[in-house]
Length: 162
Image (tube, rainbow, N blue to C red; front, side, top):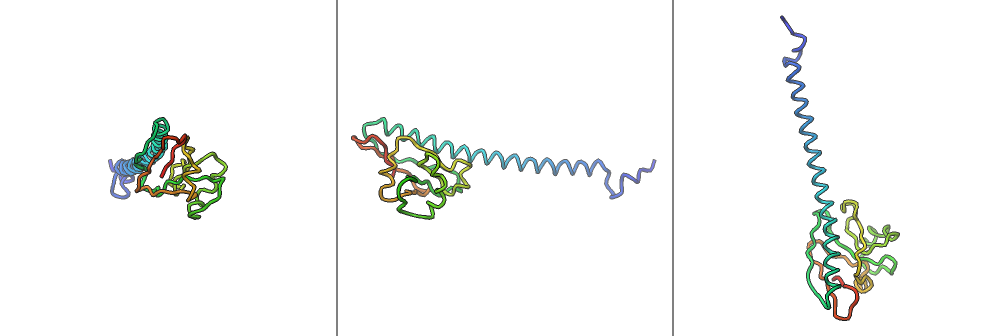
C-alpha cells in the first residue's frame, strides 16, 4: 500500500504530532516553574513580616533589648520603609510618592518598590513606636542590604527600629 498522503512533508503525522507535544510540555513546564518561583518570593515577603513581628514581640516582652535583624527579601525589593502617613512628611519624597496611596490602611511598614512586593506592599507591625522611628525622617527607609536594629530601653513600652 502506498500512503503518500500522510507523508506530504517527508515525515509521518505521528512524528510531527510527537514533536508538537514535546514543545507543549516544555512550555507548560517553564510556566509551572515560573509560578513556583513567584510563590517562593511571596513566601519570602510573608516570612519577613512574620519574623519582624516575632522579633519586635520578643524585644517588647523583655526589660530592655538591642539587636540586629537581618532583612531577607526577594532581590527586586530595594527598601523597607517605616512611615507615619498621618504625620508630616519630612524626607525622601520619592519614597513617599510610592507609598502615599496606602494612607487609607492602618499600615506602618512598607516595601519599595511596591510592585515587586508580591501584593504585600504594606503591613502594620504591632508594638513599634512609629512616632519615634519617624521623628527625624518620615518615611524612614532602610536598604535591604543593611540590617534593622531593634531596640527597646528599660522604660519604653514600645520598640524602636533603626
